[in-house]
Image 1 (tube, helix red, strand yellow):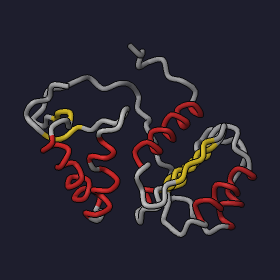
Image 2 (tube, helix red, strand yellow):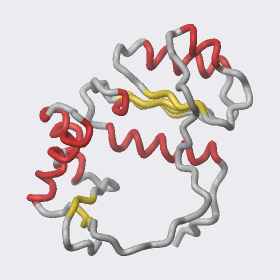
Image 3 (cartoon, one colour):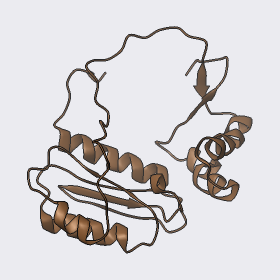
Length: 177
């Protein structure tokens, strides 16, 4: 079992997250991905910023920033670009040149003081395994994110959810894994 208090260095966490994003967006209409030591770019080609993501972290340079900005800016789709607090170099100039605008305040991605205690509550989930569950997932994604039905089925339907290493949870009363 993984020790939840043994936290790897932040750049390594960004790389793990980049691989997760790629796995979840791999069925997008124009999927492409690139992973490096100080960045990742994952573009689904979908029409929503959450479906096209990139990050700069660790030893990222202005050259890395320019390459990432060109990749996400040149695709014509909205995108989210995270710049980790671990980036020591000021990379704002190449990002601003391509029209990217810094968020009003930093987003605290995955930060917390400690692991919260497990509590029983009224909301329960179960792993999506049945045909009915696998059919329901795209409609939940559609309702929660405002994606079109066609896009939700394409990107988050049975084709994705039955692949090795991909799982999903749905609301329900039986929360057994």
